[in-house]
Structures are given as structure tokens and as C-alpha cells.
Image (tube, rainbow, N blue to C red):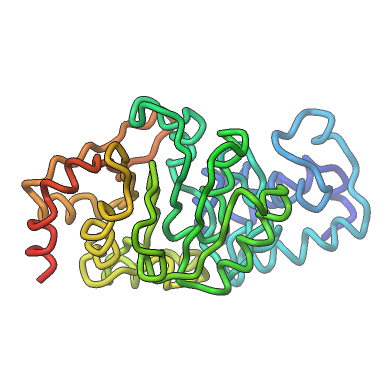
Amino acid sequence: MSEELSTVQDVVRYLVSMFAMHSVYVGHGTGNYWDEAIELVQSVMFLQPPCDESTLNSRLTRRERIHIAKMAIARTKYRIPTPYLTHRAFFAGHQFYVDRRVIIPRSPIAELIENEFHPYITKRPERVLDMCTGSGCIAIAIALQFDGECEVDAVDISADALDVAQRNIEEYGLEYVVTPIQSDLFDNLPVGDKYDLIVANPPYVNAEDLESMPDEYQREPKIALGSGDDGLDCVRKILIKARDFLTDDGVLIVEVGNTEENLMETYPNVPFRFIDFKRGGSGVFMLTADQLEVCAEYFKEQAK
């Protein structure tokens, strides 16, 4: 990277031009090229967002510029998402380690956690299940939001993902609060286990969309994205089993993203309550334990 690019602002402006020239796709934690460039540069400086004027005017060392240049090449030429280059992602106000073993945190469920799921749950949960935990960000953010006063089980089918989750759990000192469990959805959970809240961010991308997604998404584990032809393979299983693992006044919250339309067409008689987010995002629904019980036979019939 040229010696002419001496300050953070110089380098950020250059990166923005570089990203635009190569039409990189943003959406893994940032929404525009400027924020993307800022995050890449600040990570090298071991700085947290946001970026202030004093940071923009700071001079970068030669070693820092070389490091940034290498990451910029990986970002533009190989379309590697920035969080995989910086090994950090931000979710619900907390930083998490990420690498290519896990999907990059970006769920609107963060807003729900910060609001303690109000008004969708009526009491502080004692036990929570985070289904398809990935990096563990949802499980850990819930534990932190409730001051470590609720037990959280973090379930994932991938042993690699659970290794990342364990690293993040230990980083926050939550080993006795958040428990990683390897399981294909509910399969390895003890029969009779009950949770006040089940939060699931399962794979929900349909086969057609999976193949046409930008290259950046192709760098993420396909097991964490794709879920059959219509994107509902995992959701079907969750809807059938969730009631068995909820307390009588428990609540299920599931993200289905842009597969919302397929969900509504598949289950037209189910009273899904889709959540409105002030900060943007959609495709997250809730059902109570009672609603799941009423619809139990219907879910089984639709899965045949």
C-alpha cells in the first residue's frame, strides 16, 4: 500500500474506492463500503467501533498498512467477508470471535435480546435453548442480558461450530451458564427437558437462492445456510418438536428470513406472529406453547 496513504482516513477512502471498483457485497455486519473499510482498518489497530475524528487523523505504521493491504486483496479478489479476515463480529453490543467454521452473526434477534424479549415473554426466563447456535452469539448475548441468571443451552449439529462457541463462552467467563451441546436439533436433548424460551436461527435458505447468493455468502458453511428446496426443512422439524421442550407458558421464536413467504404458504392456518423491528430486519416469528400444542397434528401432517 502506497506511502502516500499515511492516515486512517487516507486508507479508508482508498479502500472504499477499491471495494466499489470490485463491486464487493456488504451485509456481514456493515451496510456500506465506508463502514466496511473502517472496520477492516480499526481491527488492525485493535480499536473498537465507532470511529471518531481522532482515529481518522491517526497515522498508520508501515506494518499496519501491509496488513491492511493483504486483507483488502482477500476481500476484493477472493470475496472473503471482512469478519473472517478480522476474526471479529459484533452482535447485540458484544464482540465475538468468528472464522469460517461458523456463519457470521447478523440476526435481527439481537434487538429482541436487548429488549429482553419484551413484550413477547412475560417473565425473566430461567432456562433458554438457543437452537443452531453457531458462534454462540445469541446464547451468550442472552446470558449477558439477563446477568447470567438464566441457564442457556447452545445447540448445534456442527462440532466445528461448537468449538468456536466454546471459545466465545470462555472469553466471557460463562462456562457455568452457557452449555454447548452437539445435536441435530432436538435429537440429543434429554427427554423431559423444559425451557421457558427457545430461540432458533436455523438454516432457512432455499436451494435456488443458495446457488444465486453473492460470493461472500458462498464462503460461509453451507450447512448453516441451506435447508432444502423450499428452505423449510429445519423449521418443519422445529415446529413438530418444540412443544415437547417448552414449559406450559413457554415461547418459541424462530428466524426464517426471506423464507417467510414459503412458510405462510405451507402453514396458512398457523397464527404466526411476525415481529416488527425498529432497526430493520424481518422474517422472525413467535408461537406460544399453547399455539404449538393446538397445531401439533397439523405440523405432523404437513411434514408428510
